[in-house]
Image 1 (cartoon, protein in one colour):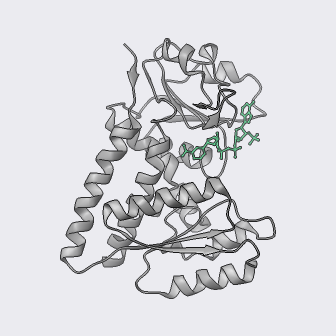
Image 2 (tube, rainbow, N blue to C red; image 1 turned 90 degrees about the vertical axis):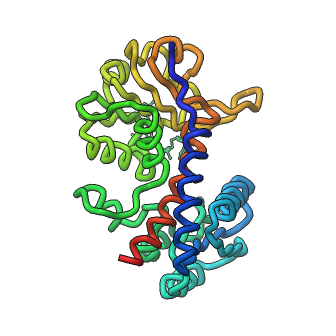
Image 3 (cartoon, rainbow, N blue to C red; image 1 turned 180 degrees about the vertical axis):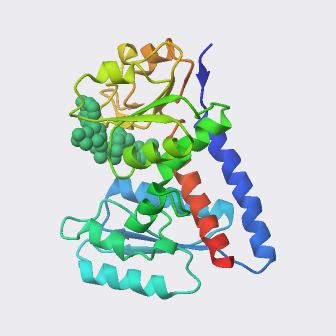
Length: 282
Ligand code: NDP
């Protein structure tokens, strides 16, 4: 029978563990603070920011919300980040993406001090991941590793195929699977025969950004399939990059959408906030 990987349950378990850790830090007089910056009023971003604030409150992390107007300049935003970088009481800084077009995303993300970069997007953290040094890891791929491990799925020695090579999902995902001793292939839009590549995968991670693109014919019998995509279909229902119905019949384990990868991203963000406090104590 196909194993349905329950991201809701696993993320809840991680949040409980973190809650306990944070309570332990509090007893020692250490409070963890996350600064969340949003520029403009993109409705989807507002939902993400609210969810992050709620998760902080649940775990016992203090959150500072900076809701800046759409007209905020790049200089003003970078100046705020500089101020937060210098604040002893702020452990983590998060800038909600996307930013308005007049603000350079890369410049802003690079302005965050690497030791406060809880999203794991700063080149220093990406480089650390690449050479196997400690640092913050992008939350979605880090969450997928937790999903696999906590579902009892072995990565070492497995053929792992990642479809997608974005900086926030595909590339860090490939590096993390490599760190776990998987044999990793990264496929992308220029891959010549995608079905042949994905058809080799024992573990198939799909972050392609195309609703239900990966159908059963892309998947090897008995593979583990992780669906990173989130879309709304014609009926306004959530769906992923994987055609769940057909693939679930063929694979050994699969993440649903919603309730798979999605809830893990915030749980791992919280984990990175707790780590940032732990690193400060070292
Ligand atoms: P991007 O659009 O940045 O990247 C998509 C990748 O897929 C690119 O590398 C692209 O290749 C590749 N690709 C596109 N079309 C094809 C194709 N036909 N065949 C093979 N490869 C293809 O997306 P993200 O990585 O940011 O996100 C991917 C999905 O995950 C989205 O649906 C997004 O909404 C979702 N997401 C979900 C999160 C969560 O918390 N659950 C978090 C982040 C993202 P190329 O590089 O050649 O263009």
